Length: 261
Image (tube, rainbow, N blue to C red; front, side, top):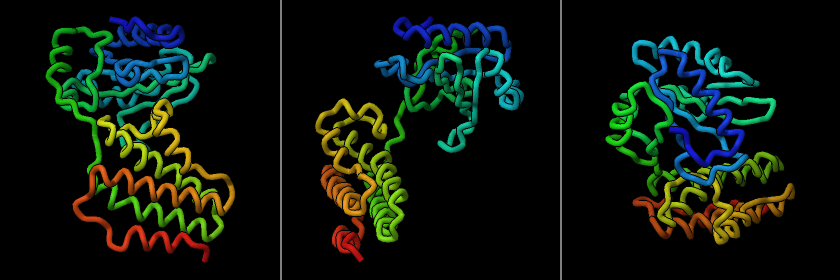
């Protein structure tokens, strides 16, 4: 069941992972997600895996998952995914030839709803697991237009306040955050794609040109320019899917706030 188009290091790492997990009776299946199913995997891709754990063993496996990841061999560092709202995730770096591997621990019933349909790589009961995958309700967690509207002006104002205070690193950081969480997702939505931030958006020439204007140098005037470009791009993208309740006094109030104090 191995994917046929993995780069050499990914294929070797996956083979080692499967060989280790097959010896652990608590693990019932391993699924592939991310680039394995989207395509375009290259030497710099992560290896995204979902481990199906027997329900009666789930608590124990979760408490021992770092040790389990270590048994695969070559584990350099690992931490859990609370920062992305996914505590079931163990984010790993293996080496010395470096490869990033995500191990997500779930039970079979968790596959009832998925953000993407995973690929079955190995299972003790392949028919049962494949049937669960095929029956899963798959929906990417796209945000609604009002979600963006309720946040966009607050985040842009935050960047403007940091600019006025001379905290340019903070302002530049907010520009990146805004690009990742608002502009990138909205651009993809307008293109009829899942709202996957700015992942691989560089290949879209129009997106690359538009988003590049929202990048700022460490210079107050350039940060102000990038904030204004971010505001204008948000308005352009918002026009394709307007929110039900636009924020009062925007964009005028924020454009005035952007002026030097």
